[in-house]
Each structure stands twice: as C-alpha cells, then as structure tokens.
Image (tube, rainbow, N blue to C red; front, side, top):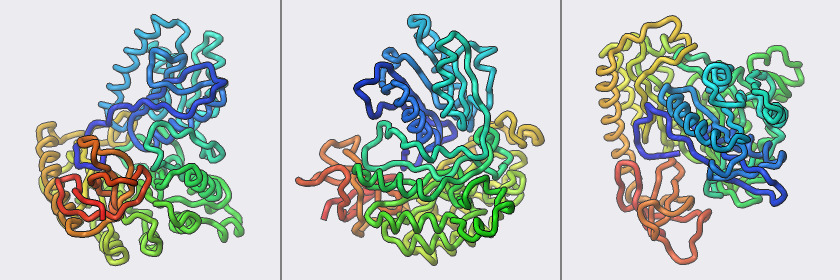
Length: 479
C-alpha cells in the first residue's frame, strides 16, 4: 500500500508474487493481483491451495505452467488493464500450448462466461468463494475443457487455510476477518462480486496472528470489506443473526471484542485494521484502541461525500452529522488518532453546493491522507441501472483536482504536526530513495525515513525524533 497522497481514480497495476517453495513441487505458478488489499490477501490463499497441488510461485510468466490474474472490478480502468495483460498472455500461450491461463476474483465473478465464450482469452474462471475448487477445475483444463466456478457462498471464509505469504517484507501481514459485503452502496459492485457478508471464527484469527508472530512478523492488519460489522456467533451470515440460538447470541463476538482479544493475546505485535464503515463503527472500538498501546492510532474511514443528498443517493447508511459526530467521539477517546478517507466526486446529481459540502467536511476532519476518485459507472450496480451519470467529465476532473489540492494542504498540515516529537517506528525496509536510510510507519500510519544506525535491522521498532516533513513523509533520526 502506498501511504503518500495520490490520485487513485485508477486501480493500481497488478503485482506479481513469489512465495514459499517446496522442493518436491515441479510446476510453476505465476500469480498477479490487482486492486484492493482483499485481493492480495486472497492471492496468498490461492498460492497456499496450489502449493499443496505441486505448484511453486515464480516471478517470470514465461516459466509458468499456470498463470492466474486475481482481478478487480471497482474501476473500468482496472478491467481494461487486465484485458491487455490477458492479450499478452494469449501470445505467450501460442508459444506454450500447455500453458493454462485463468482469471480469479471480482472480474471473474462479474463477467463469468464472457471470457470463455466470447473472448477466448482464458481456460479458467474462478470467483472469490471458489478457490478451494481450483484443483478440480485444473483437472478439467488438463482434459482439454474450459473450467468455471463463480458460485458465491454464505459460509466460505477460508479460515482453515494458512496463507502462503507472497512477497512482502516479512514484517507486516494481512489477516482476513470478514468476506463479502451487505452494504449495497449504489456505486459499488462488491456485494455482487463477493457476496453476502460473513465473519471468520475468532479462534482461527488469533491462531493465525500467533503463527505470524512466531515466524517473525511484527504487525498485522485485520482485513475485511467492512471490519466493524464483524460478528461471530458460530456460523452464518451477519444478516441471519436473528435466527441464532440464545446461547449463540449470548456468546457472540463483535469487532471491538475481537480487537481486544487479538491485542491481549499478542501484546507486542502491532495491530491495524481496514476498512471501517461509519454506519457500523462505534465508540467501543475507540475505547479498545485507547486501552491497548499495540493497536495503532489510525482509522481508514471512507466518507465518499460531504453532502447528505449525495450520501442518500449513494445509499450510504450515515449522514454528514453522524459521520462528524463519530470523528469527534474518536478524537475525544483517542486524542492522537489519525484518519484517512475515500471520496468520490461527480456522483450522479452532484451539484457545486454538494461539492462544497465535501470540501468543508474535509477541512473539519483534517484527514492525514486520502484516496480520491472521479465517479465512473460500473455495470450492474444500482446507480448504473437507475441513475443518470449527469456530471460532465471536465467538471468531474476539476472537482477532483480541487479535492486533491485540499487534501495536499491538509496532509502537509498533519505531517507538520508530527514534527518535533519522538515516534515509535517499525522498520519495514530500506528507503527507495536512499539505501542508507530505513523506512517505516508510526502509529498514525505516516511513513518515516531516517538514517541507518549500526545494529538496527528490518523488524525492529525504533524511537525516532522527527525533525522535518514533506507532504507524505516524515524525516527523522534515531534516538
């Protein structure tokens, strides 16, 4: 993840992974992921499943027996990028007739048989809830048949699968706690590509975190489309909770309790979480954050718009005032807390007044950084079906530029507030710009670089005095 301010109205390029190898494995898997953190986490699950089937990962597609793209449907640009990549692999496939090419994830779920029947780009199409079926599907492709499984599940959480940690720095890792989403925001395809929301057994989450600590990881991010709606009561989707027995309800675990359990079980491990949703987050989460030193004081809290009219059109289940009240309570409970945002500009029916409401809300919250998008229609969403995309492209881009400029000013202000103080920085690796410096993040998720000192290593937590800053980076020296 890039923690500097940037425009992300386009999904980032795919990232190819290589992970743990078994010497007895004879086949090669090239796995490339696009989009959100959930996709990257899912790729680790896929790698684990296929590792048992004789595949080691490779960073070179020309070496591969199997190429898989884990795809994203959030932005049209992301789908265009995947199509171009598949065309490149189609050329490679002409040179290697036995090569199998497959599409995983949200784009696979959304387009289903289109890849197989109309475009002939792939042999394999697998949705986010069908990764366990990959061994069977690969046998079908070996027999010369196209294979597809895009069935969504109300139960699948992959809780029993220990992910192969692909690439990464060996210090920080994602641990998925929920899958799917029930929110039905009108602009979003996720409920249709990832299915109903369901939560993972808390015991399996804690065990995965303990395992990561035992092999040297120092920080975990509890991950979900909407972590604050986490609710474990022994099985089933969150919306089926009313059917649970009285015993299940009495012993149910919500997100604040899970966060408390993980922080207590691993008091020396740093804990983050993402993504939060304003309608489900409550003060109990902030109270747990304040209680535990090892829970980072940072929340990614998408707002999408500062206008109540647009929030209603988006089917966001919070109002402007409710969002600001939540921010106020958070700052009262955790005074040093930091926030980042998601904002969509130019949504259907957005006026200049609505746009100004968004800018004013940003000023009131003072976000550390943000992810900003110009609205683009996604086929199959309620907005695409029922609303007119009536904001001209040039107006969207102008409004987006204004939001980005304001966030830049807010980011510089927030970064400067960290100057003159000592921060605990977890070393995640070398600075890209200077091999003589380390880089890491403070509790508020701000990136910090500082000169290396003898005896320090990746994974150490270092007290760093911050003496300066840029818009997206703190500059410091080890104490």
